[in-house]
Length: 308
Image (tube, rainbow, N blue to C red; front, side):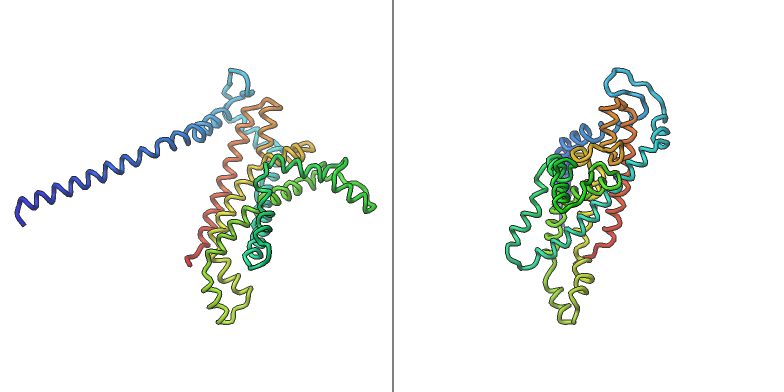
């Protein structure tokens, strides 16, 4: 090859690399609007919340007095903190377990060739499109002490009324039930998508080998459904831990603080008690809890995933 040809090839290669670099740099520009939105609505509020947690700000005045770690010390010694943390974990983990268990059962049933399965899927999924606040009020009229449907039924059977929403041992579980009822449809849809992506060849081969239905579920369905389980677990944990609307509608966090979640407790601190500094501290604790549990679930269930 002549020197001139080599020079031309080198020049062409250099031009190609330059075009590639220009294209890559232009693609980075496409990220700028998204980065601006993330900084404006996520990073800046987070940093501002951390800053406020080191003050005694009441949420309305122009002055914010720096108090160091006083709010964090107060949080760790406040019995209400551990009550709302316990409730938040119950709402998050309890709802996650029930939504995934029931959603998987629904998906396994509705993945079969049964009549009217499209209608049944729609009915199960329908509560998802309703506002959680509206859903909470609907169930409030079911569990209400005065003129509630549940008590009307109980009295018709000859028993005494129960004040379920005012019972601190019972109302957190009612909240878990309502949250599960509303969002189990999401888990069902994700599991249905996962089930329909599993090749029937696996089941046919295992049937020839004499595997039972339970063995097929354990050795084929469950391992290959693990990506769907991962998605559902992470979504349900995050959604349950930040539960707010249903609690406000059903119990308002009462009686006292018996059914408060961390979200509703922050709302109470900021708007009712005008204690924005302490509310920000509680918010930072909630963020840490959500990050730890969601990331732990993501890492654990990802490690269980297998390739088809």
